[in-house]
Image (cartoon, rainbow, N blue to C red; front, side, top):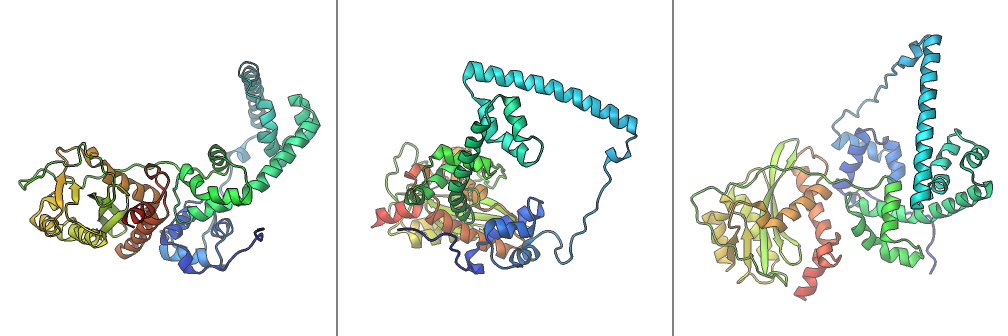
Length: 406
């Protein structure tokens, strides 16, 4: 069945998550785009929608228009003799660079069959022609390639670009909810649509397309210690070491990670199913007291179908060793398990879930604790229901967990 082109449903504010709003605000305030460009790129409806987001969530004052100060270029102060000398030097440098680059291209084409001159027609040369720096006749003469080959390459490029427009739209729609989702997971999610529309594009082709569109994501790393494991309270043996967890609700892993807003540092407690990777319980608090951490456990026990004999694994943090936390485990007949050293990698699954949330979802600093809480609730819902996992055969945590429970 043919799908109508350029159909666009009307969106409301509920269609935009807080994470997406903060992503747009950050891009505009960094100067990557104007707020009008953001509206056009992301298809945001409403003439002042982005401006409203900037005034509410931005770090800059958007109540007044920004003033742009024009600076004078140093080249404008040159004398005629200085200008001639500078241009002569630049010309000599360009001649030397041209000789070196041509030698490199010839070696790569001859010894490795790279075909760089033909690729230049499809990429760099086209850009130079559009800027008016190189004419078509100059390109064909300098590269030793016929004009017909250039025309054919141009036609192939236009055809490929038109085929990739729906792909870009698919990726943008997913990135609206998961801004830092990797290429392999993106490909898994859009593959059914590609087949339906008859678009021939593999995973490597999608990677190339995203790189050309400057849509690849870069990893982010940060670390703050949240575990105090040097205390007098009882510690429990590591029951997960050597154990194969092959079904949901066989073992739960817990951890605490820090998150920040303009109001300060806050702490996110998570309880995750070790098999399905589903976040079963979470709690955002202003401190790491046991009474706040245990709220995530209460939420997890309510979400479980049964808790008897379920292994609860954590680090040796004082919160998890406390009588309050251990009392809740005992009440629910859960078996406590802890890392047997001070190495965070012994609770690697929990650390991995922390990293996914912070590196893919909690990307932009919120103004208030309440705003951060909304962002975390949205992010965990999307993580559980929409984000595929490589370790789960590219299925979502909710899909794996609910299937086993049924």
